[in-house]
Structure formats: C-alpha cells, structure tokens
Length: 378
Image (cartoon, rainbow, N blue to C red; front, side):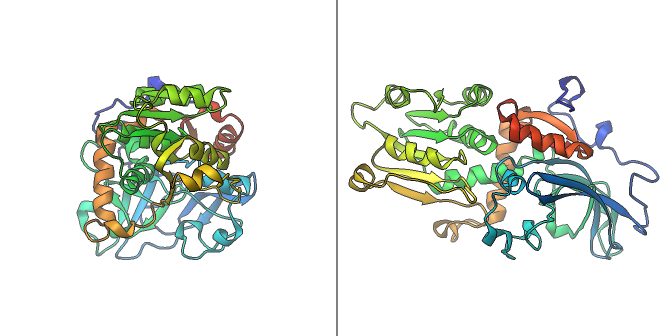
C-alpha cells in the first residue's frame, strides 16, 4: 500500500505548467503513440461486488474534432463509487441509460467522474492552443480518453491538478447550500463529514450562522471539520448526543432545536437522528445517496406536528427555483472559485497508482477512519 507522502507533494500555489510531474513527456508515453494508431489504454472495471480488474483496451483513432487526454490524477468518490463497489447500487439505476457515468449499466462497469489530464494530441480541426493544456473531465479511472473540447474544462490559472479533482464534490456542496438556503443567525448541523460533508462545512463556515455543528464517527474527520470552521464536531455514537447538541445551540432558550440540517452521511439512521434534533418548521436537506439501503424513520408525532421539511437535492440538475437565473456553467464557476479559496487538496490522505486500485477501495471499505480523500496517480 502506498500512502500519501507529504515530502513529495507539489507545493500549494505552484504553477502546474512548470511542475515536473505534469510536464508533457517527449516521445512515446506508456500506451500512447503520437499518431493515435494502435493505441492501448488501461481502464479500471468493477466486475462484481468487491471485484476490480485493470484491463487493457484499444482506443479508437482520434477524430478531427477531438482531444486525446492522458490522465494525471483521478479521485475516488467514497460515496457513489462505494455503492458500486459493494453491490449496493439500486438495480433500476444500474440500468438507467440517462446516467451516463454508468455506461450501459450492470457489471462489468467503468466508473468515476473526477479526472484531470493533459491534452497530448489534438484532432486536425482543433485549435492548436489545446495541445499540452491541463483539463478536468467527468471521466472514469483510465490512463487515456478521447473527448471533444466542449466536454472538458481547462484548469483556471493557479488551480493545481490536486485541487481540480475536487471539482465534482465542490459543485455538489455548492448545490446543497443553494438548495438549503441557510439564513443569518440560523442553528445549522451537517451530519456526515466525508469529503462532500467537509466541503459543505467549509462553505457554510463562511456564512453568519449562529452555530455550525457537525457530526461524524471518525476523529480524523471531526478534526478536519473543526479546522474548516465548524463550531463543534460531535460523535454521533455518544450516549448523550441529544444533550450535547442542545448545549451547543446558542439560541436554545428561544428555539430549542436546529433550523437546518444537512444529511450527508450516507447512513439512513442519521436522517432519523436529524429529524429528532429539528426545531419547529426546520429543514433537512438530504444529499445522501443511500442506494439500496432503506431508511427506517419515525414520522410520528414530532415530525408531523413540527412541520419539518425534507428537501431532496441532487447535483445533476438545477432546482426549478434557480433555472431562471442560474445555469450549470454559472454554478461550476462558483465551484472553481470556492476551490481556489478553500484549497481542499490538503484533504488528500492517500495516493495510489491505478495498478493498486484494489488496495485503495479495500482501504476505504475496511479502514474508512484513516481516509478522507483517496486519489489515483498515473
């Protein structure tokens, strides 16, 4: 197992255009011929629950209007990807052709949507300025891919590849905050401090809230949560959790409960805890994708009488209220700005070459308390 080595890290603020590990390579690179003929790439496949396979596969000749990209980094999504890894992806979604990241559905399956790469070849009709550019793409874990220019996003100036791989999760966090609409002086909690939870916390910490509580079972994540601005970060397994939460609310004498909660833990039981912690007419934004896991909720007395609102939020589209003024491009622009401000690459705890993918997923599955963000290097 190859863990994160700080001594080998690229310095924050360095220009990726002059960093040796991201410079274009001369001559032939692994699996790459400059003319794109007879090219093979390596791609990671989920072949069954808990089963992975790194396969060689041919890449088609480069079309005139396209780019050939060599991946330098890709990030594992510890939420969605682990559902696929564990066989917990709902069957109807595995077969849903509208979810492009899932290909044709079922196993074997390539997956992933956070890749940063360098353009190593351009089609005949593509502007020459694309060559050697660093770009982000919603692509699975593989050494190379072909895409059209409008399917990739050039990295803004000053953004490192390690920062850019957080773009999908930062866009998700931005979407959650937009949909929840936190207000000044509100008592807010975030259940779950995985990578999306931590990024959401980092955004909420910039607002004038009365308090920002977070909950997670792992000390490493609670520590990062406090560093990112949480007022307090609590262990949800504590026997006196309800009392701890109540004591942390500065407006408890006026409003004994949360105004707003984000359920981002991926654990359906956390939703029930959030309902119990809400004050009158409180809002719970549900950003977790539970997959095939069922939520056993108490929707009896308090939920009904307190008029608690449950809000479903999903980043693949804009909520109707925003569609008159916002576009996905505008939301992505905000996500880039937040990446620049928060610098989340410090949350990378482990790096693995793609050849050690099995160890990477086993780490997240069996020792999640040791990891925050895991990435593949190429």
